[in-house]
Amino acid sequence: MRGIRVYNNAEQVAQAAADYLVQQIESCVAEKGHCHVVLPGGTTPARCLEILAEKPLPWDRVHWYPGDERCYPAGHAERNDTMIKAKLFSRHQAAAKNLHVIPAELGPEEGAKKFSAILDATGGLDIVVLGMGEDGHTASLFPGNIALQDQHSAVPVYHAPKAPDERISIGLSYLKNAGECIVIATGEGKRGALEKIKEGASLPVALVEPGVWFVDKSADPE
Image (cartoon, rainbow, N blue to C red; front, side, top):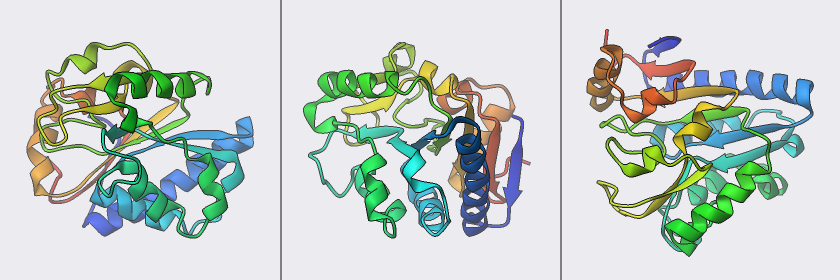
């Protein structure tokens, strides 16, 4: 593991990650005129988005994409895009037009096909923000799942080990080719996976080859 940054608690992690994202987004927009950012689900990332919503970003030039989505109906409380809309765009309703949702209500195959077309039109992702599960999964890419081998930009996911078992995820190769990737991981439950990654285990989150890890002391494998 490289680029690991350790903070006292989850709130400090969320604050630090948000500040870092502001810098990177502003730099990207200054260089390219726009920025394509992938966002995760999860509790700590949600807090990061709340903080990000308060920042003076060039909102009209930033495009946002969920890293994965559960195959629930549109508007379902447990969809990632529902959380993103509530947290990130709470103060910037007009900017929500730049959120490119995954049409997971269409099912894994059709939804992944349509989202692949959206991603392919970007020319590549600039910044990827990922969370991590206790098993080392990220987005909806789980250890040993065949979706890890799919080379498309968005991939259907079946037999996920947690509900719902049908999902859509941005593909591993597409995440790996992003300009930059950061991971947010907090809580003692994440320590085991981080220890395995430090020892060289090829867990999905490690396969993306993140450049910066934002973790709290309870998750830190040291």
